[in-house]
Amino acid sequence: MKLARTIADPTKRPGKAVSRSDFFPRLVAMQRFVHARNFAVFKTNNSGLASRRKLTCILDNFASDGEISATSVLDAYGQALLEHLELSSLPLLWNGRDEAQTAETPDFTAFVTRLKARVLPVCGIAMPVRLGSMGNGYTVFVANYLDITSETIIDLHARSHQMMMDLLVLDERRSAPDEVLSNREIACLQLAGDGLVSEEIAGQLGLSVHTVNAYLASATVKLDAVNRIQTIAKAIRLGYIA
Image: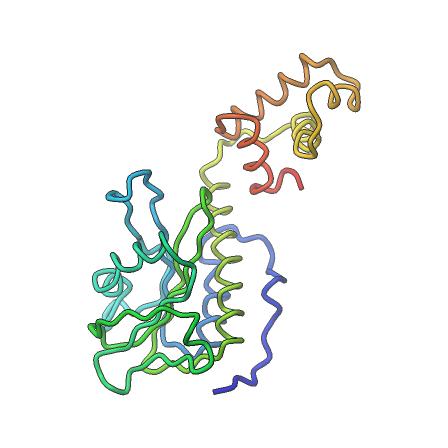
C-alpha cells in the first residue's frame, strides 16, 4: 500500500525537548505514518554482562485498561528483542494470533527479520536502534494489520534513530551535574575536540599549558567523564561544543 501522505523531513527536528512527554507528538506522527494503533519505546540498561541486560519501556501510549500493553510485548518477545539487538539492525516483525493480523513488507522481505511465534492479539514492527555506548533500544508499533513499503521502513528507521539519540541526550542532560561549563572550559574543549593538544590550545587562547589542563580536568569532573576523549564526546552530545 503506497502512502501518499506528505511527511516532515525527519532530519528537521522540533525544538529542544525538556521532558519525555515532548516526544509524544513525534511518536504519534510516526504511528500515524504507518497506520499503527499504539507505540512504545524500549531502552536497554546497558549492563556489561549480557545475562543482566534487559529492556524497559520508557514511553508508550497503550491504554491502561486495554487487552495489550507495552509489558505484554516485552513478556512475549523481550528476550528475542534483546538477542536480535546484539546481532542485527534489521527491523523485526511479528504477526498476531488471528490469521488477518499480519505485518506485511512485500518489497522489503529480504531486509527484515520475522518472529515466528504468534502470541499477541496484534501484529507489530520493532525498529532496532544501536547507538553503542550512548544506548540501545527499539521503537515499536503495533496494529491489527500493517502493510509497510520499503520507503516507509527506511524513513521510520531514520526517525527512530534520531528520536532515540534525542531521548538519550535529554536523559543525560537531566542526570548531569548542576554545574555548567565555563566559557574557558568550553573553549578548551572545543579546541581539544578539533584535535589540538594542550600546547596548541594554550597558544591559541593565550593561556599557560597548566591552565589549559586545569580547565580540561575541571570539565571532565563536571561532566562525570573518565578521560579527555569521553569528556569531548559528552560535551558534543550535551550541546556544549560542535
